[in-house]
Image 1 (cartoon, rainbow, N blue to C red):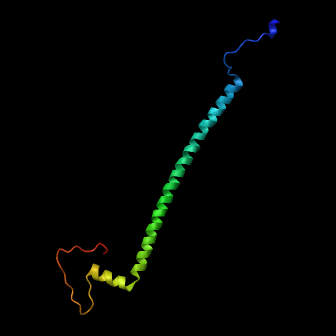
Image 2 (image 1 turned 45 degrees about the vertical axis):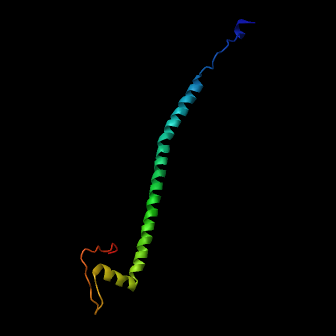
Image 3 (image 1 turned 45 degrees about the horizontal axis):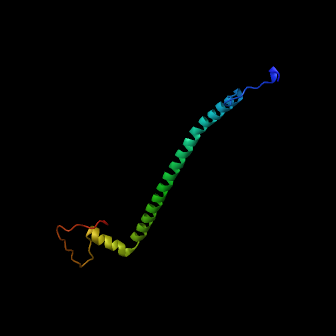
Length: 106
């Protein structure tokens, strides 16, 4: 064997300059994706909150629409006038009893 063709045995792989540069670039790219990823997940959470709120508002709107429809019914208006306002028809006698809790629909 000649002195120039001799190789040294390696116990572990060496970190070359090219590998170190690649490692730095990958680390920088990983750090740059953290902020957009955090914003993405925060926005997904906000969207879920807004969708839940929209569903609650739609349910409330449906309930109010039913209430509007009920108030257009003359029988319902008469019931409310009698219960909430104590109104009576001509010729009827209203009896008022003390300590009777009023209904919660008024």
